Length: 321
Image (cartoon, rainbow, N blue to C red; front, side, top):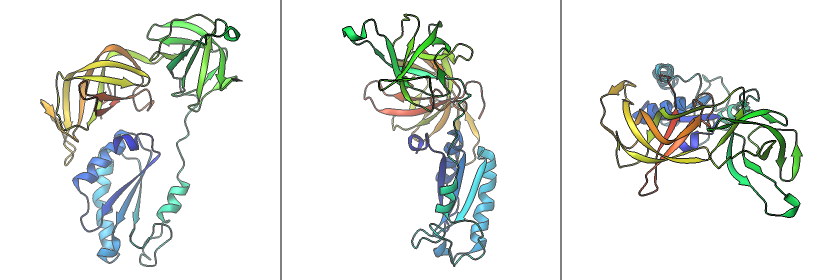
């Protein structure tokens, strides 16, 4: 659910009308808020099994609203549906005359997708250094990757992280075509006016708005693995195009999914736990807090022996969730 929702603009959380809010409902709601998904749908399903009762629907809605406020969900829409016959899914149902909103599909077709702010700082994690060994590309050096936020234009002064070296963008290329600017998460090749030592995993950023660089970050982690997460545990860290090793320096707290209380003093965490930790890495991370940039603010933890992805982390810096 974490991986699938990490790029979503809307989330649908299903609630069985017979059972109401369960632990899973709160867990998915918390993760949805953690991932910053802007539009949330609460679909109260199986309304046919409660005789399309307005009272049942209202009771579930009233019970969920304090949960939404506590986890920080901003825009929540509620739908009484029955998936079996499609009631209020594709078209309005005759069995819910008391419901005056749109059908679920109509709502989803009109939800605005996220408009990425081209004014946010440019972020370009370098994926590959392009050095063709051909006479026609004599002394060519390009840096290929995918924009991870903002825009870059030819002539922009940039900084290469983590070295801090400055240069100017001389060319922006896309499949052999020269561009004057790049944004919207396009895959391009940047060329600089200076011969700069850049490797995969480095990040090109505006000189005026650099990303943060640190070997120690605070994370909210969703733990995937049956092997517990422990303080002092060592993992492979993959962040944008870089890979390094990291150690869990400190476990701050676990989120009690039933009450949303913060449980301190935890020594190990189990599968499906959501925790805040401090991670220390061997090589510095070039990042923004997750709430500012989904791409530079997220990472995954990999077991160094099995190569399994064991956790997903959202960098919160000094924020408190």
